[in-house]
Image 1 (spheres, rainbow, N blue to C red):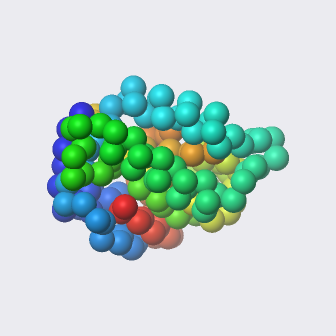
Image 2 (cartoon, one colour; image 1 turned 135 degrees about the vertical axis):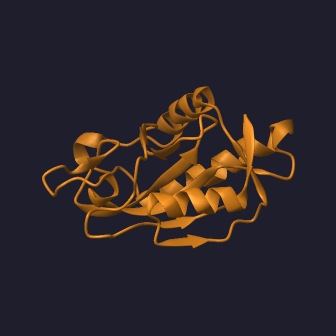
Length: 158
């Protein structure tokens, strides 16, 4: 695990194309390993499953805030995270614009679009940002988060 300052988080998200970023409650964030993200994904899939064939099983806002809360609980149980948070954040995106795709590609981590969608963004210890779907545990590297028309995201640093 590596630790980064909130200023770094904010700068990286802005460079990816974020439109609005809220101020977080911690000055430093621990970036979880990809192994942690995989285990967290399995936990989320088990505890908050989605039926992808029907789109979203549950309210995506509730699922994304639940994910942030569960990451916070995990961080509190980790001695390396004392007085820090995990770099796991709530984000509102437009699918497929968050992928920079044309309107004929309609999914983010198997959540169908086009739609506005609340999900997660995680900065892992490989310095890469990932869209993380708490309803099914899937993660996709976030290369950029705006479409050609400049529509971006709102990120809530928690």
